[in-house]
View 1 (cartoon, rainbow, N blue to C red):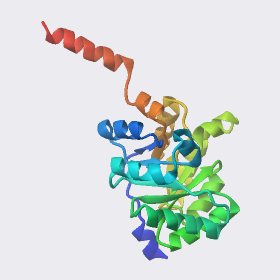
View 2 (cartoon, one colour; view 1 turned 90 degrees about the vertical axis):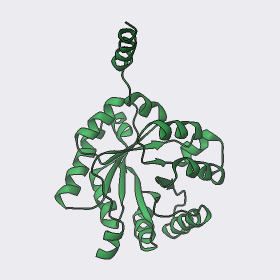
View 3 (tube, helix red, strand yellow; view 1 turned 180 degrees about the vertical axis):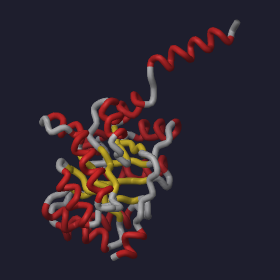
View 4 (cartoon, rainbow, N blue to C red; view 1 turned 45 degrees about the vertical axis):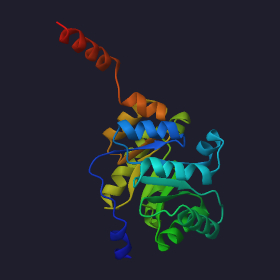
Length: 229
């Protein structure tokens, strides 16, 4: 109902950055130096660390404090997704910063409603079309995560899909926000920011690259040289 919508209203005035990694050293460095707003995880990312979810999540929590933490479910049936989301919430003592990542399968759309009714926030993930995003938003998702680079890899123009989703949400005045995911280079993040994407999640390598430029480094060296005269 309207009460629930207001409770989970997301106020984003400018595009936010999240780290798509479970590597603790990477997370520590990003949160130490840059204005990060959270961390996203999925089974593939966790497998790279060769650590269990129960080991990694508390370490991430220590690094990010009260920032967003998006944890993906691996169950297939809606009721099982709900129970899995509850287990994570209770086991890790997660609060308002917890977002349940749910892939947009048939059971996933049902699970979005169940998880929201249980008082948790949802990030609908593995999105490849504007219609998938719209349906997820109508089901109650707080974020939708279109996969930009994977769309580009199949000649489906990920930036255009992000733009269409942003414009759709704006036209229908939906509170759901767009969390761009699956980036391989700086230009992709630049382009989604220019079409109004509300948030992006990217690897350490891409985030590190987007925040610097060789001409900036040269300028600093020149400043140091001039300062010695």
